[in-house]
Structure formats: C-alpha cells, structure tokens
Length: 497
Ligand code: MLC
Ligand code: AMP
Image 1 (cartoon, rainbow, N blue to C red):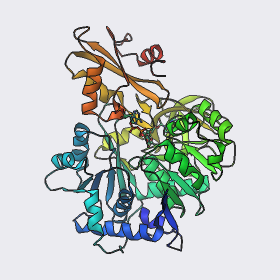
Image 2 (spheres, rainbow, N blue to C red):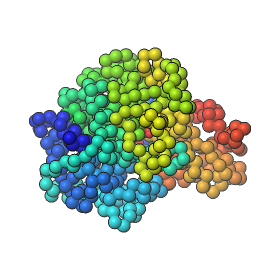
Image 3 (tube, rainbow, N blue to C red):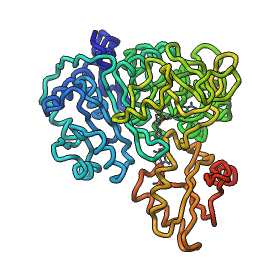
C-alpha cells in the first residue's frame, strides 16, 4: 500500500471534483479537481528540476494558495518539505540552509536575494511566483510517489535549550496517522468549512489544519494573514476554527464580535500555548461555545484533546488521543499516579522519526521502552485528563511561537557593553507570554533600551525581540551559580500586562 500522505488524503477527496476546497470573501478559489491538478503540476516541475525522493525543499514564503499547492506537490513527489517562518533573518537562515542541505530553495520577492546568497552553489533557488508561472506549462497528472510509512515527508526545526536548532523528521505515516485520528476525534466531514488563518510554516496550520480538511474532503476559508475584520467576515461561512490563544483573546477584545458570528460554527479549537481559564469562560459567555483545547508539539503532532462530545475542562488539554499513549513519570521514567506532577512522555504512530543528523540527541530523548520525553511537565487526573503544569525546557511561548532564551542571550552577550544577560517570559496581554531581557552592563549606565532592541531587531525574527529590557547590577543566582529565572519571572511578572 502507498503510505504517501497525499495518496492517503486523495482517498478522502470528494467524488465530485467540483467540490470547493478553498474559499475566501470572493467565493470559491479552488475545487478538489484544481487542487489535484495544481499539485501534480508542481510535482512534475520539481522532479523535472532534478529533485529526487528524499531531497529537501526549503521554503520561506508568505502564505498563499500557490504555497499550499507547492507543499502538496512536494509531498506527492516524495520530497522533504522544509518550511521556514517568514520572520527569520539572514543569521537565522544561514544555519537552516547549511544544515538541511536542500536541493531546491523557494523564496519570495523579499527573501530571494538573501536565500540565493546563503544557498550552496549546486542548489536551485527560485521564487514561488516563478515556480507558479512555470508550473502552468507542466502536465496536470502525476503518479504520486510510492512512500513507506517511515519515509520522511517534512523537516521542521525547533531551537532547543542550547540555542542550536534541531531538525525534526516527520514521516508520511506520522502525519497521516495524526490527521486521521483528529478527523475522527473532532468529527470532521465533507460538510465542514475550516477557518484557516494560521501560518503554514508550523505544525498547527500546516498539518493539523490542512491535514483535517484534506483527510475528510472538507473545505477551508483561506485567510493569508490574521486580521480581526477578516475573521469576523469569514466566521459566518465556517463551521470550525483553529487558533492559538491570541486568536481568541483578540476576538474577545473586539466589541463587534457577537454570538451571531458563530451561528454556523460547531467547534472552536485552541492549541500551541496554554489557554487561560478566563479566556475559556469569557468565550463561553460571549458565544455559548466551549473552546476545545488540545495539546501537541512539532515532534509528536497532536497528543491529547478535550472531547468533542464529553466534558471540556478549562485548564486541561484532555485525555490522550485514541492511538496515543501519554504517561507522567518521575526522573527515572517510572509512571506516576494520577494527581502527581512529572515529565510528560508520549508514544504512538504520531511520534517523529528522530532529529536530523543527531542520532545521539534522538536516543537521549527517548526512553528504553520507546516513549518520547516532551520536556513538558504535567499531571493526569482521575478521569484521565492531562494538564500541562510547566516546562522542564527553558522556553517562552509568545503568540503560539516558541522562543528559546539561550538563543537571545547568546546574541545579547555579544553586544558591546553587555557583560551578561538573562532572558525570560512574563505574562503579556496579547501574546500570552512576552520576552523580557535582563542585562548586566560592563559599565553601568552606558547602554540604552532602544539600542538593544534595535540591535536585536536587525539580527533575529521580530517575534523573538524582547518586549522590554531591564538593567540589573547583577543577575540573581543560587549557590551553584545558576541564574534564578523563577525569581526574575516573579519580580517582573506585571511588566508587560
Ligand atoms: C508578531 N510579533 C510577535 C508575534 N507575532 N511578537 C511576539 N509573539 C508573536 N507571536 C511582533 C512582530 O515582530 C511585530 O513587532 C509586531 O509583533 C506585530 O507584528 P504582526 O506581524 O503585525 O503581528 P500579527 O500579524 O498580529 O501576528 C501575531 C499572531 C501571529 C499571533 C497573529 O504571531 C501568529 O499567527 N501566531 C501563530 C503562530 C503559530 O502558528 N503557532 C503554532 C506553532 S505549532 P514590531 O516590533 O516590528 O512591531 C506548535 C505545535 C502545536 O506550537 O501544538 O500546535
Ligand atoms: P512546538 O515546539 O512549537 O511544537 O511547541 C510545542 C510546545 O507547545 C509543547 O511542548 C508545549 O510546551 C506547548 N503547547 C502546545 N499546546 C499546548 C497547550 N494546549 N497548553 C500548553 N502548552 C501547549
């Protein structure tokens, strides 16, 4: 059997190819037949450019319909799709291009010059616009590549506590199994229209959103950039919405948002960051809907979800998905009893194939009996519902995007006049958590906040740039010399709210 993700999707496509798959404010953008032929043309074009099964295609482009068709073309051709956040700057991109060793690099007008400069000499570097134009000359049929379950379909990077990004290898089997489980857990069908406003360079928008739609023959209302007016005008045409918590807090802050917008909606899903109980409650009282919170990560796809039909409990991420095992353990990987807090570990067909070129690190993160250690701390209650209590990893989640303090600290420490720094997260009214940098100067009084922020802005993606900088005479440390981030978080907890 062909385990290629696109092949698995295509088995759920509606019989009538004229069924809409993409709509927007103007009407139908694409039906299933045109999605199939467009992805075939991209697959023909990419293979014609010399890309072979398993080759990486690195992509840094704004969200668009062409970007979606190109993604599906890569999958169909058995190529490894490697998407990058469009906010990444030159210094960040250099590492990804060197490490992933792509055969083809795709950018857009704004990024192509830098991508071209950074790519290895034998790489094809091309804009998505030119690809789209050239694809029109290709055959609109393509025999989807034969893939095995464990063949890698996508490579997504996550930074990690050392500040060096790790490539996460996700297979066709991982992505298909998770999409199928989510379709049945959340009751997706051909009747659904998903409000798709998430970026398509992360797991949430790329695999969860698109995966649920294509694995059930549903439709998507396609929004390239999250904007409150677009969401409000889209909602009445939709039945399901997916978002990070910021999407919901922004909706609640809009006085124009009422129950009437939700008349056709059956489900609001939140994930990628903790949803505050106050958001859950305010949303219920405004709309009558209980937001369904689920939990996942790039390495594993989705692991747990509050139920579609049963009780949705605020502050929890629900029971494990049907084919996923979740346990909470002590430091020696021994399972703990319900109610006890420990490491969250996961096993199942959703769990990734390993870190790209890092077999040692992969071994470290799996237990002997095959569970992946997520780095999250949690607790499972007597009903089997998981709560995420904290993180063992030093990580900030801002507006659903992960930021690893080490990476920012390494950058700040290199600035002239900085002796040392500590980066931590505090509550932020819009983004859930916001980045704060504490800096010790080599000469007290010599640096200005604005200069530090400006330097950071010129070197790293905007979402990682500290929202506030504070100057300290020294960093708080324990007897072992370790910086006390908890103390910093507690002292400055109201700085950004
Ligand atoms: C943008 N900015 C952010 C930010 N996004 N700052 C902190 N955190 C963020 N997430 C900054 C910009 O650099 C800019 O700074 C200013 O805020 C406004 O930028 P913008 O582009 O206008 O912001 P906006 O379009 O409003 O974007 C905010 C957002 C977006 C929340 C809509 O970040 C978003 O779509 N987040 C979702 C990310 C996502 O898909 N996560 C899933 C990961 S998968 P300045 O200084 O220049 O003004 C995963 C697994 C799982 O985690 O379980 O799902
Ligand atoms: P990423 O590495 O971007 O895939 O982010 C995954 C991390 O996001 C997880 O390890 C969790 O720490 C966090 N996360 C995802 N969903 C939730 C949720 N519903 N509640 C709390 N944390 C979450």
